[in-house]
Length: 85
Image (tube, rainbow, N blue to C red; front, top):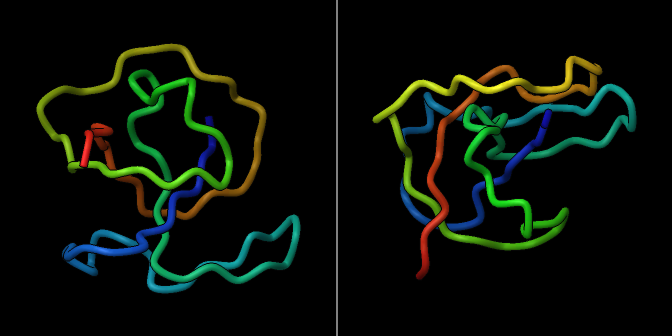
């Protein structure tokens, strides 16, 4: 559940995301990314590389068990809700 998400389009307060971040396990540099702050409600059918639309969701605090296995993710996290276009 240590997902890294990249903003492809739309407007967002840039202080909420990482302008650039390097994945320490691959050395790959990413721009406009953030870590997933809402792993409990993230749809299981979205896979790596998929594009989707979302809204920032601060309405509820996530209270679920997540795997503690470490994989690097950006330090800034956002809770989001996936929506239809």
